[in-house]
Every structure is written in C-alpha cells, then in structure tokens.
Length: 220
Image 1 (cartoon, rainbow, N blue to C red):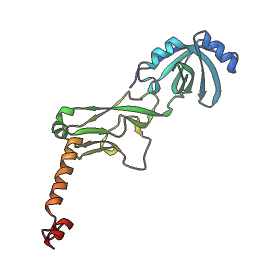
Image 2 (cartoon, one colour):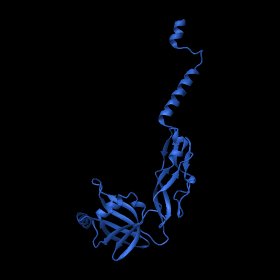
Image 3 (tube, rainbow, N blue to C red):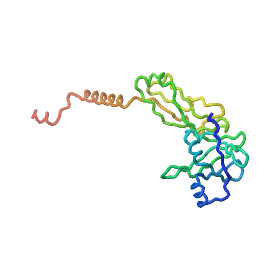
Image 4 (tube, rainbow, N blue to C red):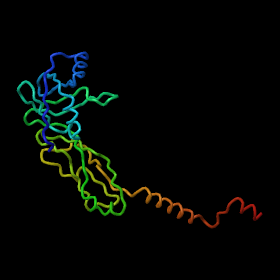
C-alpha cells in the first residue's frame, strides 16, 4: 500500500478567480475537499509541498491526510489542474474518505522476472497494453503497484486480468470482460524475416506453365 502523505492546509474565506490568483501569487494552491455527504470545504495548500508530493509518482493513489483547523482529514486526490504553459499546479480536488469507504483508483503495473521468460530470452518483446489497472479498493488498502510475474511465458502468450491475483481489499473495476494487460510478441525483425520467407515461398509455387508476355512473343 502507498504510504499516507501529510499536507498542511488552511481554509479559504473567499472564492472566485480573483481570490485564487491572489493565493497563487503567494505560493499557495487553491483546493477543495468534497464527498462523504458533507458540504465541500474550500482550502489552500503550499505549492512547494504539493509539487514535492506530486514528484513522488504515487500522489494520485495515495491517502493524503490534510491538516487544517486543528484536525486531520483523510482524503484521496481526484484531480490536479496544471497551468497549460508552466505545468504548475493551479487547483486540486480531494475526495473525503469515510470509514470503510471504497474508492476507484488507477494503480500502475510492474513486470518482474523477465529473465525467467523463455520468450523474452529468445528475443521476444513485452508489449504492454495497460500500464495501469483500474481497481476498486478499500480506502486503507490501496496498493502502490501491482506486480506481474512473467516467469515461463513464451512468444505469443498473453496476460489477462484473470491471471492476476489482486491484493486483499482490491478488485478490478472492469468486470464485463477478461481484458489483456500485456503480450509477448516476436520482434519486428523476426516478423520481417518471416514475411520475406513467405514471399519467397509463394514465388517458388508459381506454376511452370505460366509465361510472361515477352516469352510468349518470342515463341511466336
């Protein structure tokens, strides 16, 4: 599970674009906490701390404990708006987590034991179809990543969601199909060679009775 992050915050007394611009000039980022059958809570956080947490690579699937007004609120980041030119964060949405709540998250996948895959050792290529899995997880059991073991896989093999044992408290958000996560395919050079061999074989099979127009003309 991703470690919980802590983010100090202050409540916002004023809303609107003007107030938000003023906060950003002071190095603060406007944000809002919503959900849990409660009214949205407008807050602002320090941009420097937010950028540092975004840099961890797992901010969006981590529990973020927001401290403000003498209390700590467990949340899950749902959206971070970035400036189109500078990529600086300009607004953040946090989902308030109730006890026992389940949340939808995108969890990255990592592949292990590639050296134990005969297909990869022969020159095959791991073709990753999904770099993340959409999961429904208990709020306090969000995995930081899903490991997929490729031991024993050959060229042509595919890894489907049914092959994966998900951590306790997690299940796939997609339940209507056994979708593909990755496949092991032959390298493009091998494919080209096979195609060339196929063309040569086809040429060899041309019937001997067939003649070109020039040959026919010569015979006349």
